Length: 479
Length: 86
Image (cartoon, rainbow over all chains, first blue to last red):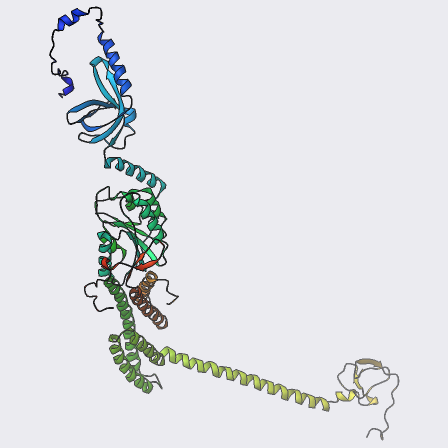
């Protein structure tokens, strides 16, 4: 590769020399001859002393990365160039890849390379000019916030399906707010929008934006916030790359949508927000579905709801007809016929009602339900069973009554019997005398012998007695 | 507003699950009618919520006050087909 540096320095425009040799000859004592090394050393002192820490800007060319890891290139602008090197140790801190044609600002020292008699710029630091420096800041902030977890997918919140109030943080002057309002009006005419105006570019605009996000997040009923602005230069959009905006978005109590510039513009705000919209209009489309779609969705569900119940109803109707046709449902046929007619009427009315809206439909179903309850065989069984159960109960109580009465009667009779019982006489002081084995009552003294044993029952207790003497009764006493 | 319904989302979700339950469940007539009634109630709630939001554009100022938005924002332009709704 041919380089200008491979060529000898061009000879400057020759000064008119009056007399080269005579000049030297004039003052031979003043002549002081230096070696090349000495001269080079002097130049080195001059150069390196003067340009020990220098900032310079230019365009990179002839950029080559050597396998030693050092980067050699030329910095040039119109009419001048300087050789430059960046050693591996400095190179590895660089956030971007230097390449030909890139305009950079370099910081370094000028150094002389003795063997070749060349000077070069030893670069310590390089940054791309203009946006490039910011790009660097962008990358750095992005990496830091990512490490903090601010962009983590699990932090992303779902947007409300139907927001109550939609917060918008943007400038009142831009096209963005008009786009947002227009789209929202078209999709969801009665959307409630609350705008927190803010500067979106210029000095410290990021502080305004951050404050606005915090303020709108506190408004009651606001359940989603759009933050953004229309398209502009990268510098115009820069505020949305500032950390303070990122923090405000992360701290917003309700879900956020970023909508900065155009599709191709990506800002730090896009990474932090819960959802990134490519443009403000797109944000308005993302924030709420079309009202028509909502209505259609709900109606679809309502129709399915009705269809299920209609099917159910038809099954019941055919079951009714089956019941009507069944013989041997003794007692019922006449009533069923009546009910059946009315039910058929009802069904007819019901079908009309189906077209007349939900409210009427609901009432009809209720009415029909009552009719069906009257006819449902299970219900009939239920009724019979209820009757059975109740008669069972009265039977039971009758039995109890009867038993009670019988008991009363028995007790009365027992009392009467007792009053007639010979045993009752014992209470009055009489006793009963039995033979020894209690098989017979001793009625006559003659029926026992002296020395025989007898049992005597008293009102309280028994006696076992031995007969000492016996005195047979006189015939007169026996009467 | 019905306190048994949390919000629009919850209402839609419940309505969906009721429809599903009715569609694939072998439920008693009584239960079916109860679910149907609830379903009708939910769908009315959703329709009401859709009409509920106020058609309004407001500006939150530095002092935290809400004021009507400037007319030039197009907030009052009627969307096509919306004319006469208000």
